[in-house]
Image 1 (cartoon, helix red, strand yellow):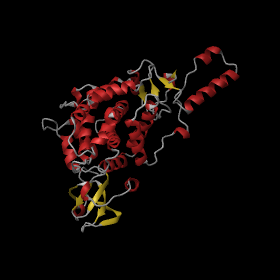
Image 2: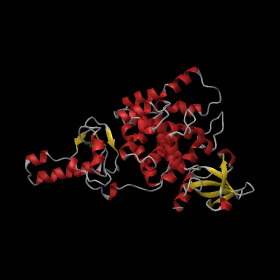
Image 3: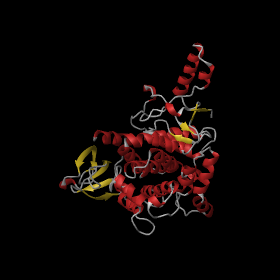
Length: 404
């Protein structure tokens, strides 16, 4: 890591950052593409670091522009004091650095996330984790419905790459709920996404093993599961993570802490939202020893807290995703079975496409239906195991995007 100070006055408010912002100690403050809207947003970042820095090893074009500017000053015989004060500027991004809003390759992301979280290495964990998180932020921001669709659909079938898929799902649904319902500042949303993505880093391989294990857990496995939150925090520290909010949220993401969100400090608010989304995602996933829950049951499990009261964090997730979130299967009044592709005007009227006709036969094509019409209203959920048809996730995502 080669940190160079960033001139605060050079930051362009309202424009995506062309590089990652770090503190003086290398602490991650804001991802590339993050928009600092105003001075108040900047003060949130400054509260976590004495001075803004950029790592020239990861800043790409911005560092090259800095070196080119320095060379021009030398050629022009510029005053040495002016050269010495030159800092990297957060200038407007070039076309090459602009955000790519194309569709995600979800199978490739599953593989990347699995490789990263199963075998984290101090040498490259930071840059690889940053790249993965940036991509999830990009897709959950620009295509939240397609992102939730892909990850819920894959989570309900995936066992081989369960742990990483689950982490991506929890990370993305949390970020969607935090942005759209809780209206958290973007810096807090990004910390939330990072904490959720890394929450199980100390037991990724074991988690993938357990979903395919028919026998009861051994004593050693139980101990590993029960201690994984604290071990994940320790491992993240060893891998270079220094953000205290991120680390505390990971350590506390299994704590049972019901109650109003506003009465909790920032790290515990993040931990609680992760805990509720973790419950939701775990209920959706299949196990060798049990079938996945219908999506409505999974939503209900996160909606009510340990005292059987409405949980504020769980309620935010339900409000963000709807009762029938993208990726869920539902039965219509027509007796057809459809997959939810996008959220709709209300929690009970999502955008869907029929995949099985009233006789239980695959339709072959995805046939749109308007669930706001009484004749096509949703009458209930359908478990993934009862849908005898499979689709490439890219096809579902493409259909979802066409419904905009």
